[in-house]
Image (tube, rainbow, N blue to C red; front, top):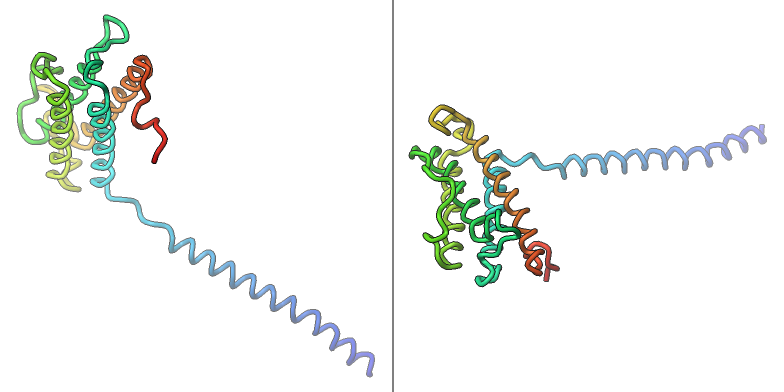
Length: 197
């Protein structure tokens, strides 16, 4: 009988800590899972996402416009291409294909503002800033629900506000990429490629 009692005590001594450890592991796993669930944030509203994207590409192009040396503003990689200044004017001017219809105005007639209208670097920087500020104001004016409203985009075409905005964001991003090449060909490092301080 003593052997059975001793055996039961020994088995309980080894079994209880293992069972207790399993319970503690399960509790820790539950706590980790609850922390992970609590850490997941909901998606941002569409208005914030499109506005942030619009403002970010605008910030990048504005930084380039402000940074690139004025004496190189008419630099062209080849004679057939736009100059650095003309690239900025094209990207900024194209924003009004979004802003004007969204704000109930007639789409602009010409795609590219002329270089002789914007003679100095300061003129071009101001135009780039204004075009992105006007676009951001148009996005905000529509609000979350207004992003899916349709506007006349071209004389014979309607499009949703959101779709036009994303199209122009992508267009500006393409010109940002082209201007990175202009920087490199001119022997310069683009602002976004420089080490952060």
